Length: 280
Image (cartoon, rainbow, N blue to C red):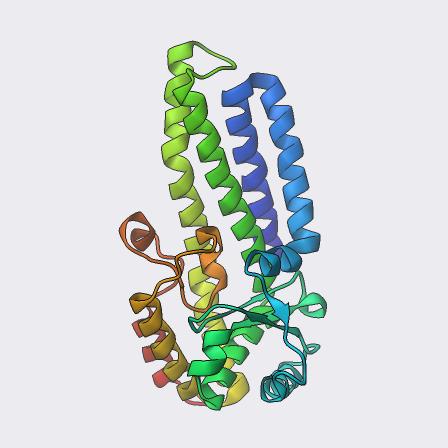
């Protein structure tokens, strides 16, 4: 199933890039868009972990800096039957976490400074096990490809808006070309959010269930989600790239307006209710 999702994502990215390339630059635009899409797909496959970690200025968290967290990661990875992921710290005051990497042998779990400061050991364990659930389920590569595609589609929307402002160019008549560009500029962000939503929501429920199974304590993650959701609503992250929202265990960005309509995460209350009803 993961291979099918990856193939689908790559296919959509290629198709959308070439569509916009055709509208903006005709045949030469298609060729240029194909080359850009190819580079982005290959780059995200091999360097997705480095790209995301760099985006959030994450630094490796050493054994000496956080022995308790490393102990929990070793314990959970052993229970999950995967190699111990590398551990990184994101210098954000809000509590959150994400996992990245193309497979379990190249996996990374990143936690924010706020998460280590605000959560107790059982809550941290639940969050870490949730991120291990994404690694076990091979969600990490899919999520990074989705983030790359969402960012690329948003970039295409910007191209389309500027091309429309300057009158459009490429194939077809001038008026038709402008209408196509405006349509793409409006459709692109919605398309990006819907792709993220379709991929992320089911994966979050699966990772929650895996966390409960690995820790044998669904209450730890439920308490953590309650705290993370409360802080996210009161203090949403102002910086960062909204195209990466689905990577985090809880959306750290402001979710009003159109982004609230196409939420990348299932309702936190529903996730907590499912965890509280689990018997392990």
